[in-house]
Image 1 (cartoon, rainbow, N blue to C red):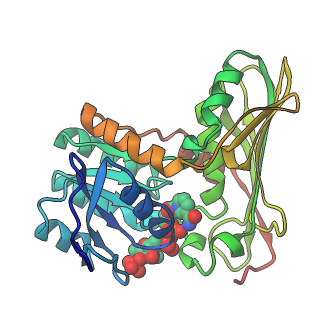
Image 2 (cartoon, rainbow, N blue to C red; image 1 turned 120 degrees about the horizontal axis):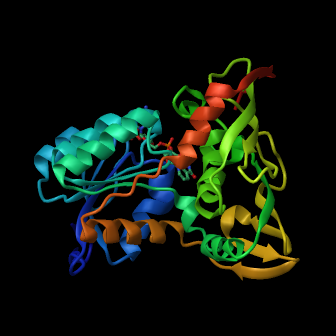
Amino acid sequence: MTTADGPVPRKAGARSIAIVGVGKIARDQHIPTIATGEDFALLAAASRNAVVGDVECFETLEALLAARPDVECVSLCTPPQVRYADARRALEAGRHVMLEKPPGATLAEVQDLAALAGAQGVTLFATWHSRHAAAVEAAKAWLAAREVRGVEITWKEDVRRWHPGQEWIWEPGAMGVFDPGINALSILTAIHPRRLHLASADLYFPENRGTPIAADLAFHDPAGHPATAAFDWRQEGDQTWTIRFDTDAGEALLSDGGARFTAGGETVFAGPDHEYAGLYARFAELIAAGASEVDLSPMIHVADAFTLGRRIVVDPFHF
Ligand code: NAP
């Protein structure tokens, strides 16, 4: 790796990593997080149409794996529909693998990858970036000491603002509005003191699209309390990413996608964004421990929504 000033020294003790799928999230988060962290050093990238400056770039992961046996880890930032084949390729080549969320297009393919990682003795990390939002751990600790009597998720954003021109997100396997909605479900499954399961779903499909633009979900709570989620991609103006809890100590609210937690109107915890730094730190920990982490519970709720969901056809969607 070189710059105008000469070779860039490899970070001492850092593991070598390659990025696959150089698009929005790779540029917004993965590449800068790897560059500023100590755990990994970016050595290469694979993308059909894009390159990353200062590292060796390939059009396919296959070519990268063949040419760079020195790359120990691969971080897959492609859309979920195409992730399985590359993940399998990297695991078969003995590399540690990190998957963007959602970890794949189906539950079975991710289970297959987890088994393969185990057989190969390498790490597979299925990430849920929202679990690393600043206030999630504080919310979990606070809720663990209370009785949760209800939960209401509201995750409403403008798809044109956050996913401009992304056609893949409307195709089967990409989950439509569950692409952001699964972030809320990843938090819920991490912090709710009980295991909930889906009871019903209304799914709103634009008449010209293969995935929903909105969804209303109801969950069964074994304690008999209400639990709902409303996801909508048609929200203009203010964006809403909140989870409201009714508890024996009053109302609590996790807001800003998990960055702020308030209880009884008082801030319990709020902090800056460090989601991707948290993910890469966890990946490094898992590799060092010789372990994998593949929690499919958020994706099970989504799969159940497609199984149980009532299909409601709404206006066509055009970017
Ligand atoms: P994106 O920019 O549309 O796609 C990432 C890159 O993947 C593309 O630029 C493309 O690069 C490559 N790619 C390979 N096969 C593709 C295919 N069949 N269709 C489209 N692109 C393909 O997507 P993204 O927003 O980065 O999202 C990627 C993953 O990250 C998704 O699972 C998403 O849920 C997750 N994520 C996104 C965000 C966000 O803010 N956007 C936040 C958190 C997580 P080449 O054409 O060069 O191959």
